Image (tube, rainbow, N blue to C red; front, side, top):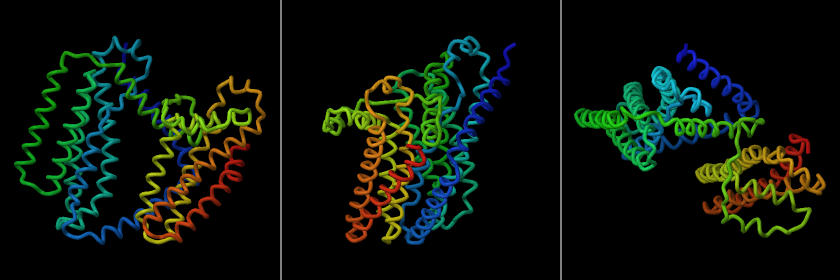
Length: 403
């Protein structure tokens, strides 16, 4: 006898154990210290920035843009596996309770994220509003209801295979979420808000009627679930080996200009391989770009010199530490072991590439300090960044990877 309650419980508990196992590696001692430093620094400057706000500051607009995006992104974690297309598909009509529980779990998790973001944004709103923090819980309840609407509507949209419907749904729901949030924080007339609520209800019932006779798109649901887990596994893979992770690469032909400059010689074999992996893999190049952009923004808005230099070194550490898995990128490819190339060239290539990446990031950080007109601090930033990069690559990375 098929028991959908037991199936959901087994899948959900298995997923929680999986996440918990890797989270222990992610939130290890030194990373917690780095995160606490980042949070403390960000909180200090955020508070200073809030104190400088004037009454005409558009806090409601900023909140609407950010909360609107958070509300619109509302996937239902369904815990489905690839094999379900064969073994569970015939039982689709008995899975209503399974997906309702998945929706409830998704609401709890995403509602918690909504709570955290709203808590961060409320001091900004309290600064320019007379209500202050008194509106926090009423706003939270209303936004949680709106999040539930987004989850149920997103689930209905997943019954369609047309990509255009999914794109238009995201645009429409984002506009509804952002406008409603803006009017809510602006304390607009209650009848205007009720009108938007009626629009939301009609929007859901329209797609509910359209999909009533449609079947689940199992391949789409499973693909979405695998992509969400792949994002987490890529993060966890920076701290420990993750067998479930599948490599994702993109051609990026426009970056070949950097590869074509390499000499066609035996001692450059591993440099070519590591460079290809870095430029083609979304895990490495995407991580470098994200951390560089975040670092630039953080450094640019720090007003004193010592803070800019320390933040630059902090982001160099985060980049270098999370690029260390590149060393083992080809460890499961047997053909690499067939190369008639000494192991010492692999060490030289990895160190050279990692040093180059960190040096490029150092220069980028320093250039943005120059833009602020602080030439001397920029020079100190370059010197400190190059020295730190050298120590990190040739001492820290060497001992950690045992190369």
